[in-house]
Image 1 (cartoon, rainbow, N blue to C red):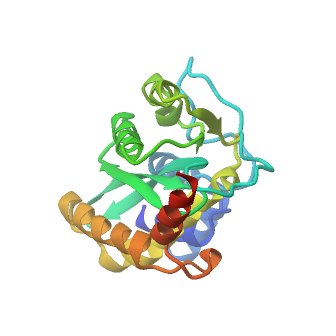
Image 2 (cartoon, one colour):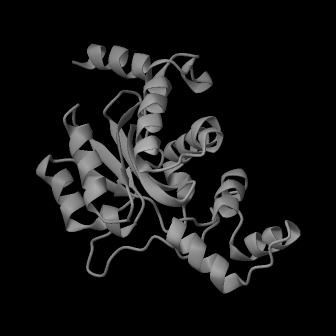
Length: 234
């Protein structure tokens, strides 16, 4: 799983077959069924169009993708959220984050030892204490299509947007966030356990929001862009 995580971060377009080939090249012959099971457990899928590994639960409503061809020109116009796999020295956890699309500001994050919906709702509640977006975009995973999650958005009159099936690029900015967090923090630290992971992620997200310049933002920080632009809209 550690090898799969690192290779997926480098080559997110690798599906099961290419992962099997790559592992064999590294001296780890593993059958496709095992690789498929582990990738499913980790929430990984290749970025080319295909049936998704993060499927909505039966009976959950799927919403249309609302961000295509939409010009995002202010904070709180659109937020997005996603889940990623985080390795530990003796296991793994999941990380969810809520990000402002315009500024790349991480509004909230939570970790969990399982893919239960509750930790995603917790991150959403934390983010909603900061403000309210016009649109909230996610993939079609069962956590985000659940009544608990979509109900919170509907309670705040937020338009719900969901990626098309197999279209990871529909949520490209948070996919880039995961790549950045893993290369700049997680792979360098090799966390021992959950408390160590949470303590280090708290420090990193503070750095990411308030001290790390982004080329796409004119070398300003997400916090500077988010709060300065927000003042102009209030």
